Length: 460
Ligand code: UD1
Ligand code: CA
Image (cartoon, rainbow, N blue to C red; front, top):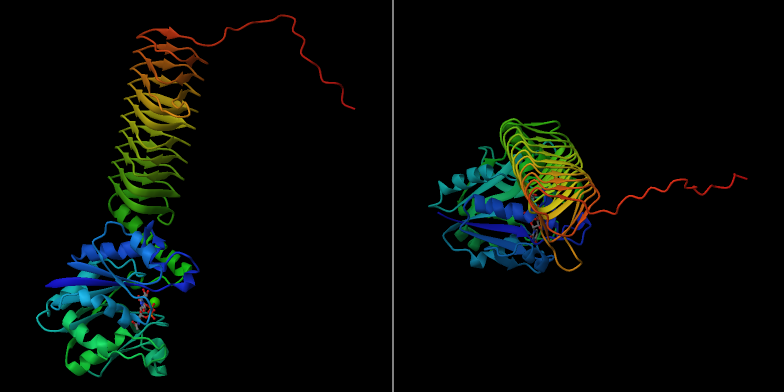
């Protein structure tokens, strides 16, 4: 069976009150349209068409290097008209799965169920609808069934009679239809209805009169087929997505202090016995090994953290690699290119960038370590700064194994410090230091006896 997907994404979404086209609004850090395109890929679409209209250029450029086929619907004349714009590029013997660019959270499992219902009958023309039972069906097209429970039509809210409005089974909009039938039916649609639109849903009545079988597949989770028309619904989708992700993490062995206070915008992979405290945000690809503990209020993106490391409260990690048994934070900032070997300690108010730090080394307080190569068992004292930048170029600082850097040292790069060398506190190091040497580079202390401190005049 050839499966082609048509994603409807031409609508403006005026209720978003936004300059951004509706389908580009994000859920979990990714545009709704990207979620739907990924869904098409997940169900092995042979060709994916996206119908665009409002903000077409912006929508196109949001999905660079994509293999999707774009179809332009310059005027939004209804869902049937939208599908018709993509149809010329669809092969006659395909089954066409219709998805909506603003319905981002349908699972591949649900769509697979729909597609296999239609695949079983793919040798003859067919329509398979995804429907759902809603407590409040207001606003949706209602599924009309006859006495033998067969679907005979879909009636839009605005065209429905009082009795039809009481039907709780509604059209999700998602359906799978034989291309050959669509090609026959869509040119016959009329806009003679309450909204003056070409309704895709009118093909159901055409299927009935052509004797084409109509199958139904029911979605069990309404949020899976929920679209976002305004920012309240967008937030509902976000919370649903996050809760579903949190459940997945817990089932995979992570403990969450509060499943409603974690946000994953990307992918988070966790080992066993991971603990994540409240208000953490994960972005991009993050991996946490067994026994990792994340304190409250951490923001972690594109980072790998090995087993039993602990990230303490209020730390920000981006593009970092953290070794096993490390301790990072509270209030630490690891920037891209930070690579910590095992058992490294990074303390409060320490910023690192492009820094390779060896086993057991410590940068415990108030430091900036950038463009640095640091060996094992190095102690970097409080307030140490690598002066890596002259305003134009960046230079490297190298500290060999077992170096001891006294507090408040400025390491003016390029500079290299030999094995087990010691630097006196308050030094400005501008030249290399050999193995085992002590370097002190600070002005000598003068003591002046009998010094009279200036006195303040008495208060008036
Ligand atoms: C549609 C269905 C309704 C269903 C509901 C589910 C029709 C006639 N009605 O109604 O039965 O219960 O979805 O949410 O199909 N779009 C275009 N071009 C257009 C019109 C729409 O691309 O000319 C896109 C929109 O951007 C949107 C989707 O199609 O993503 C649905 O359009 P919308 O106007 O929201 O349809 P509903 O009236 O909600
Ligand atoms: Ca809608």
